[in-house]
Length: 373
Image (cartoon, rainbow, N blue to C red; front, side, top):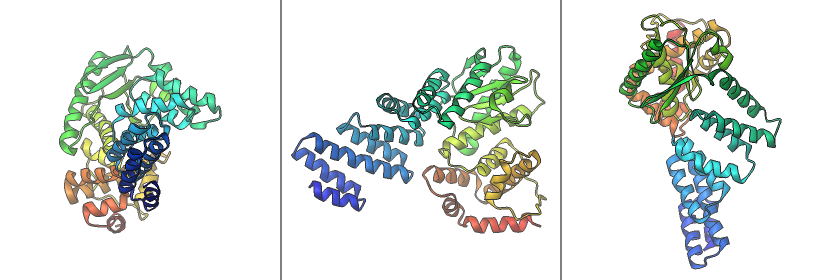
């Protein structure tokens, strides 16, 4: 049966393979037979994860762990599939077990990011330092530690406000009226985005408010950037109350980024992120927008990330125009369907074709014709 199972595995018939190997292990209980079963479910789990079936992958890795509870491969797979399924709380324990058992720098860095998003900077820095102890030249680990250290230097004295859906951190000298206004606007943004897009963040979101001079020191972003989402919502606010409407749009925009990222499991391209966030904040596309070049989605993506503010602004305007056109074609239900297809691992062009009935190339041709005049 083991030989038959291996032959089936070669054809990626995982269900039949694992059934045969489980039968063999039942008939002849031994460590090697249990390893065969664990190995089969691990292979099956990675295949499911590669195909975007994160929930199924979790179940498969858990099944394998019943046979091999300490298997690093199965634990690593369970942790990564939980992250892809958006169940971060369930990813921490298996990944911590992998980290304790070995010297996997990538697992350490993933844990650092996860703990940072849980607002536990101490654990995050501990994992980065452990990775650097094994590999002092690890460039991403050094950059992450520098970022965490910058945040710690500025945010150590910040006050923390816990609410049902948000954790807000702010400078102690920030106007209490501004803090309360931000809290009210966060709740309103959650309701608005949830009602419009049909989804809200399942866990509490961390929101960090920065006063004058703190924003650029911590984030390293240009002064003209008016918000950021990197797992936490970060907002640069002056000590005075912003003009009417500006704070509302800013908070809705950044909360929308968090929801889009979570809903698509980080697979939404930047043009979609920025265009949809602008639509949700209430911005309207310029119906007379024209560009001299022939825009493509890849070109819009490049413009949005350009260091030149004027070119970046053009990218944002084009992203808003394109996403507005897509929403006009199918409403927010179509946009939600696109995010779910991206979450499940579908390529962007294929997902757009299934949602709107037109290939991405056909849509781009239409947009070029209109935007080029």
